[in-house]
Length: 141
Image 1 (cartoon, rainbow, N blue to C red):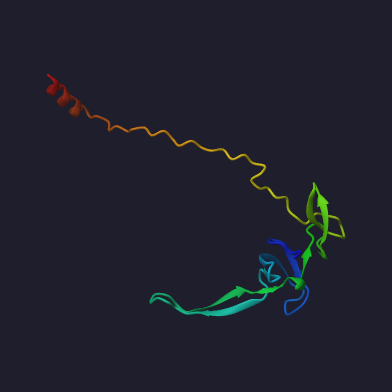
Image 2: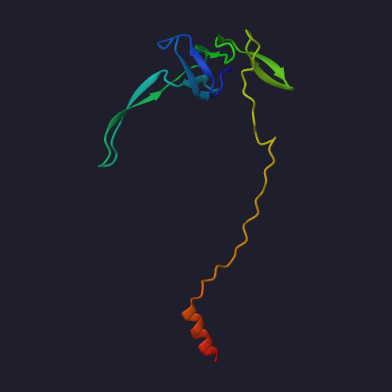
């Protein structure tokens, strides 16, 4: 499946043909994607408590990944994704302009995780009042 999360795609077939949207979920095993604002489905939600209100909920449904094409961010055209290599890694490439479609992955490898030591616990003592100090001095005498 050449479509990934957060890709901008163009729907090429079906009721929503010609519409564009952002991929909000993918399911590689079933070969389906969920696109923002596409394939809106209505579902009745029943009130479960006394203070709730029953309502109709609108939710995006999944469509087949073969019904969408990725839009290249560089040339703004719907393209079939071509694979290439950059820096020893396999990446998705636009065949029309040659731009890389994969965004740079900034994972944990490049960053060193600094462990913070726990803060030292200091005992806070109540401030002594002048009256309490005088009584302690009187007791000491």
